[in-house]
Image (cartoon, rainbow, N blue to C red; front, side):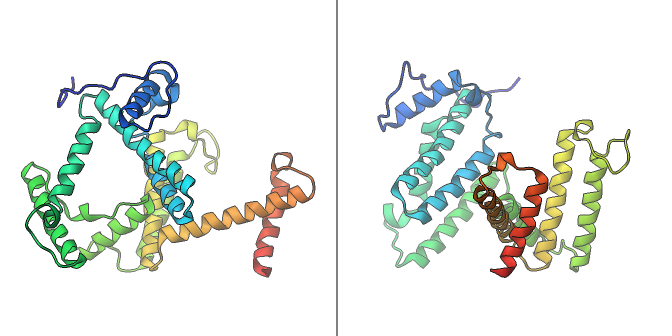
Length: 293
């Protein structure tokens, strides 16, 4: 039986049809209502929302780059939704709520800006950054005193899974935990792909056949993650950025698929009216088009 860390007061779900008031309390009440009456919202967990939080952060970045006020407002709202959603669920668990999050943030901002709120004087932004780093070290020491010491790889930069994988490998490499050359990284990649295939093989059929229904999904996910981590290692050993390489591939795929869609439209057809044979032929045509452009 779990022991709740503290007593919290859950927001009361809004009744009837709500209105957009611009007030935080009304937003919390709206979220509480969704957790009661929306089937999708009800089944979410803090872990299931992780991909959405990451996605919304990226979309906010794109909106800021676009400089479109409506898009920026919408994406800021989506990021805020993730905060509100998580707070609602943690409050349901009796752990903490929105006011606790806001208080923690306020305390951090005040603590990290002594040059603003105290007598301390800092001349420029370089000095501010240096003092900020000193304060973070003090916070880490306080965290260690609570039994949560900072480990060497805890400095991994936040970001996508590919970015974190490459950075954690880089940090480990600085500590001597690395292959001497790219060949070792390739060998590890081959090993991980073989393990993934072994996890998927349906023993009742030819060894070349795979049936995901015969395997444990959690084990497949772990093996697939190992493959991707190993591939990132290859990229790092080649002095390439795995994130940039993947984004290049995504853009290339979208461009080629757009070519397929355009060619079908020119023929009076929709994607849904085509088949894999026709689309594959157009895919090859798209590649030829790229080479000639």
